[in-house]
Length: 386
Length: 228
Image (tube, rainbow over all chains, first blue to last red; front, side, top):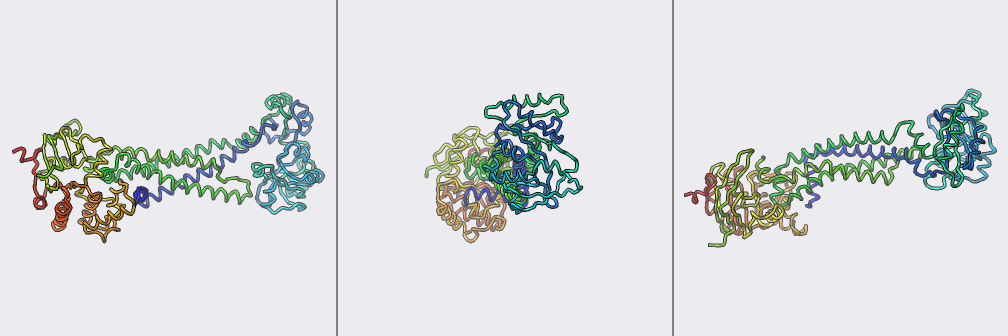
């Protein structure tokens, strides 16, 4: 027998109680892992994008389209090197799989986003083919799309002039990302803005949701942002210009402040866990006061007895926490695989690190008070049941 | 007369219970030679267990000296006293106080976790201790699978395993029937005679006291011989 063996034996003195407590710890850390991953997805867009691009949208909301005719004015702003624009298409693959899909001007987009890697002739074919579509590597791989195929896509928003929401595009290129971060985002597809303008039933023509302003080297993003918004102030198409990073964050925050929501959910989960595990530990110490006194009688110091109780709390939270985090990893990887990488729920190193810190803090929080009580026990009083 | 194992000099012990101060021992002096087997008897509240706790280093006197094996244990700090107990004294309680989650051998091995012995050496010592108390065949059994007498034998093996010179036993047969009690007391007698352990037991049972080489009577915190 070892000290660790003694700790584990004590942990399972009431098997049912310990298993139920372990399950609650596992569930809490499973939720923690998945929610932290969700949180990092919603904030990760900002992590890798440099401030080399600005996003301009309608001041009211990006759902209000702006005229493409603004492009020359935008390009005339000093410091703006090139402008691309994107229109949300709302594509759906087969019955119910939403796609991240935009209508755009291929050449402009290619100029503004050199991060996308695709053979030049495919960019040129995309530009020349009015029904052309290019897809990210992940997306093409997930659905088995090959260049030259006709891809049927329906739109959640835009019917064609014949009233049908079923569109068909020619896949003319498959693009990849220049590095791992961009490769993770090759779950998108792009179509021709010109074709979209002509074919949609609503007659939405020459309007777009966002402009992407590529900045010249050394340009001051803040000044350009103010200049652009001032240019269109008091016009029918007032704008809001922000960095790509801020845009990504504010886009996500339309759903809500995900970080705040996640933090509150986790606070509730861990607070409940604190009560559950804390109560288990307190009960466990309370019901074996005489045993702890015997340990001291045998020569275990006050510190050793404190250590035994803390070790029990740590073993309980650590085992439950690790199982929960591993399950979260498996579940996250499963979701990521099932969605072809559209939901990057795999637990990264950061989430694991926070998880380990949470395990340590939780162990101390639930174990410290019972451990101190055990440490302070006076042998003669405890043996006499006082 | 052989050199003393236990020397208690002019010891008083005062407990505070709320606002009340209760003096349990009043200037008690006592000497127990090495290899002695002493029974402490007396009515409830006479201070028997208090005296035993002081001799075993579980508590400290309010005044006076307690010297065991030449060490002033009343002057030791909490950690030093714990270390001293681990190496110098074995305890046997009325209700055995075994760890229910551990087997008999696990319980006996517990004090050895405080030593530097290897796992193999610990196992060997445990086997010897269980052999001495006649429970080698019950090593893997949990306390709930043992009878009261067997549990008390395991408790004695636990007290013996680190080879202390002093055993203190608080009502070791108080929870046992006559026959089993006699077996346990016989075992203590063997430990005293053959293994030269100094033994102090507290008991209410005059028959139990007969197994000891001498009996001391306490009343109202004083030894009767002293009071006389």
